Image (cartoon, rainbow, N blue to C red):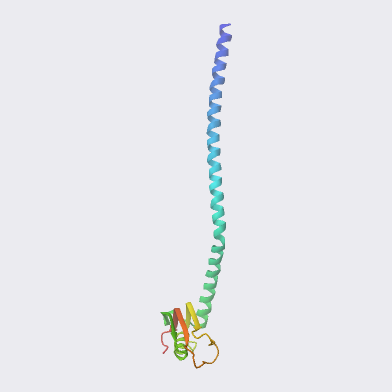
Length: 159
């Protein structure tokens, strides 16, 4: 009977140790599950951010393709970027007579098609309330309000 009791105690001890190990493993697995859930939530948040950036990436890819196409076209047409220069133009809004505005615009926009004006800001409006932008000047005409800001590109040999 003593051996039976001894055997029961050993079995009880072994079952208790097994139960303790199982409880420890279960807690460990619950901890890993919580970490995995946190990682899934983080990955989903990152996925949402990346999906939001996809239109920007696609737009940049389109720009890169267009840039390559333009470079090939420029090379085929014989345009050499080393033979071109640029200057920054900035004119604060101010009233100028029509002839002065025409002179300024023809200088910047280039009537010979040998230069290009790339505007950051461009605004022309009439100053007189009865004047029109595309109509002949009236006797009380006070000209235009002219503002421009941008870059003029021109070939280096151009006058």
